[in-house]
Image (cartoon, rainbow, N blue to C red):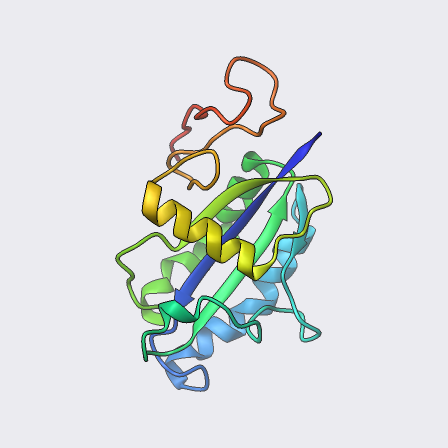
Length: 169
């Protein structure tokens, strides 16, 4: 069965969402989402009727009495497609400013995993995958950009969830 790559990343806001400090992030959200939606290899992203996922709740255990946690979750045809978007100009500009908008977190905040074509992950599934990554490190069940794993249906010697060669950017 063919597979696609799911990703989730979370961030704990550095200030309340309606603060002046967060205004730049929320102003950039729709334009960056539009770039993602149009990107080669993009399949799906978590969103509400407002067109983004800022109203989706989850990862409550990350809030710890602090500001709210935002969730970004999407599905891509491949690791290469996701990587091209993440390190593309529009998203890279937002990444450069993340420290002013989001608290530094000691544990992994991004998690990747393979899903069967057509599967749309739930927030609960994403929570489980991120907790798995934090508890066990990168495995075929949950991994990150630095230690990716091949899709279960990938051709060649690294097929079946083996660690993939890492391409550094």
